[in-house]
Image (cartoon, rainbow, N blue to C red; front, side, top):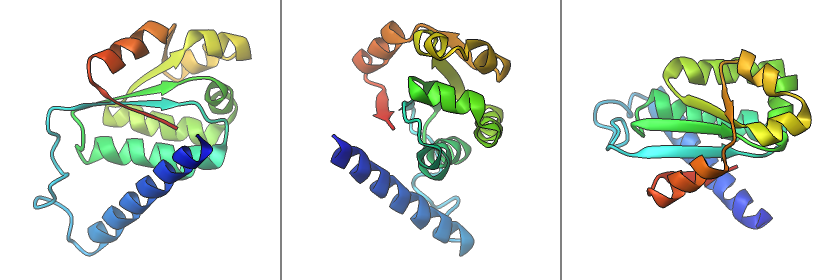
Length: 149
């Protein structure tokens, strides 16, 4: 399982680096096949309590995917240890607010946030804190693209 997560992280990082380099040289843009959404929805389930994973991979991908229109709709779910990390880390809070400004839908698992005592803080950030077991199941059954980090 750890190998799979590592492999996904490496692939996503390579993808982001490729697009960053292409953007610097004017290659990406109107002719970029990923510059327009194709009617698809992405759900990102963020569970890691590791700030480096958040800042150097998850947040970077979600922000750029929304900003560049790679998906029509992106829902970002804070679940488990990530809820505690986000409530305590001001830099990550700023990044979440940037994602929200781009139109990313922000949600958090209430059961998890309550266990860490951070539901109120997440709500202050504009995150919809609610029980997420059923909504996540619905996303999966309805064919959303669901990735977990």
